[in-house]
Image (tube, rainbow over all chains, first blue to last red; front, top):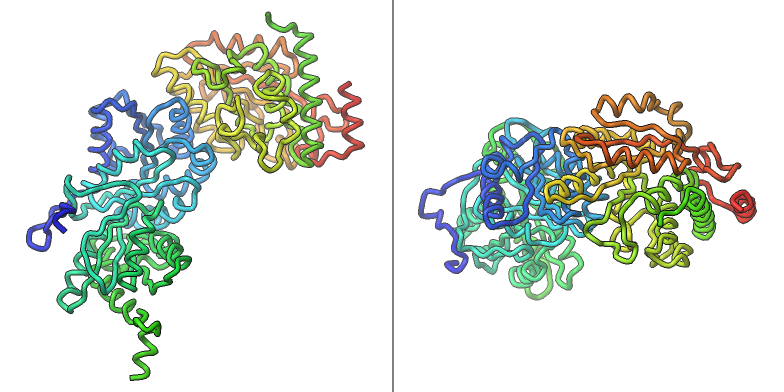
Length: 340
Length: 271
């Protein structure tokens, strides 16, 4: 997949960086290019990725204090007056505490406000379940007109930030505080709403985003050794979902696994299932994520393993979903096996 | 030529009659809190705010955020009478395909400066518009009309701190202090008094007036415009259901359905 400009991490040491840092670079890039940008934070600039921006552009930075709801409402006003606004706080505070303001003020008014959920997924690590946000993608995705993006690494996070500034209507972007592998480069294409095929294969497809995309690529490599060709797709934009690429994966590979660092309810897995269940080709799906429970304290990598979010878990999911795959004759694999 | 206080009172009466007609026609909506807000809106749109009804999105216009969004009928009637759109449109309020949604939608109604609906959210929006105005060196003022029951919402006080901290003297909040909310009296449900002191300790300039007296209202708004370094809140003492005797100070008229008979009786009172 040379045209995707990916890092060949199978043959080299993989570098890591928090995607929050890519957010910071994207914000600085926007200000340097002369965008009339205002960046807001709610007393979390130290961890969310906005402190570097604050240092460079203090006049364009506004710390609202621990007032997440007021921050979103104030952002609405700034946006009404023509400013390009980015608001920043932890994912569960942005998507959770301020949800009604995002809904009734930002989305109802179709305002150009970019909401950035920092330290999202399990990346708040040691802080534990109350501070980790596993349901943010699901609750943001239900809002009319909301775009939802989960960048896979710091490089893509920068691109997503810059692209969000030019996208009409509200955007939710989810970032991680933990260091996660860098698998894309500046050459890797990125367009909101367009998924990227990062690895070809015809036996099954894994649709993923965030840090789980790295795990998905590793899983595909494991399965290659077993003779299986697994397609890996970067679904960085959960909404609007790239239905064309998802449908093609369903038709051409016949079995799908989704993998995300969040709840199995209503996130990327939910979006893909909704799309395919209503398509002309319903397809076996396995949703890899966190099963209807809160997170807990631990190191980020430990937690990914603890909650079954590793390449091995994805590989098992691929084998499982392939066992449910329909045979070319239209009979399911299980029934065919029974006859043998 | 500014209208005289007498003319403003006549306009207010017409707006009140429009509100009742809209509510009868719609079969639902909020009478009490709309009628208590009418004089405030008339003072703002006819006397105080710099607006151009023929150019609703004129950049230098003064803004109004209707945080007490359930008073939409009063705002719609005021905007129609001020010339933003046809008075006949008022009869479409709350009906399918109407430009006059139950709660204000800026994308559907000329003259609405912000879409609102969920209580307690308007002041934050007003603050954001005011911050942008200060950054851009614009002189327009931002008004935010709030209900008193809304002050139960925590976001109102977050926004109160923000406006004072950032010295948003271009923000003027108005509290329609009718002392009633949906379920009863504000002081019986969760007391707001002493409301003036609350805002004073939040570092706001506080003016308290009779919210049905247009001269006092316009004087309060001029005072607010002259205050530097501090936002102003005008606490307007009002009567819920003002102008219709059987509605006045009755909590059930927060959103009770108006019948033909009661409508006739109300219109007689406003003849």
